[in-house]
Image 1: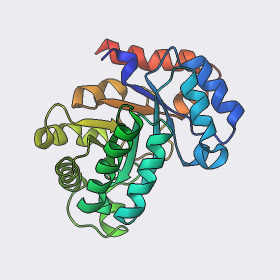
Image 2: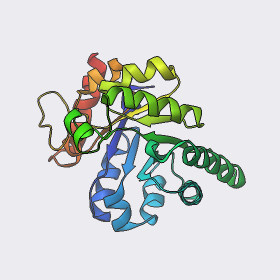
Image 3: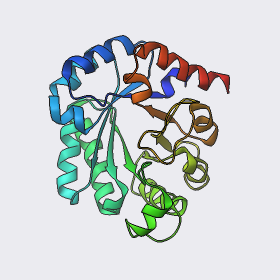
Length: 239
């Protein structure tokens, strides 16, 4: 992969106009855009088609977590929208993840299109160890839980996971080199953490084994998003 292909820009805005403005200037620079809850719920699926017409790839980040039949049907819809990556919650269990993987393959085959990659969310990068144990109520370390859910996702037929780069090396140990690791909580050197707890710089994330780096506000909330994207890509190249 070229350095810019590792970068996924999170279009975490609620305006179609702002999202398209960002997509138009950034499409030549980055590998993919993430359309999350805020933008999807504000603008609907038509925006996805418009962004794809620019030649961009799309990660639809809705973190599906429901009974297997419901998730299966949702994955088929998102496949029809032309998603390149779809995510579900690993906490939904093996049967749910198997249903998601199966639905993506079946719908893509029916349409004669490339199958979207289906990945599982592990532990949110906004959670620290104390919250994970004492508020969420799951015992043990975050790393051990992430490794468990990553292997469970792989055994369920999924293509990868969403996880902090702090757990990427451990995931590589149990899931191998081909498993996709999508890493949020990326912050360029010297930038503010915001609401993220387990943050990592672009260079360190790639070094630890992340495949894709998701960056939002450090690019989309500045005056020159193209320059910000180039800075982050530059940090990848330096390493």
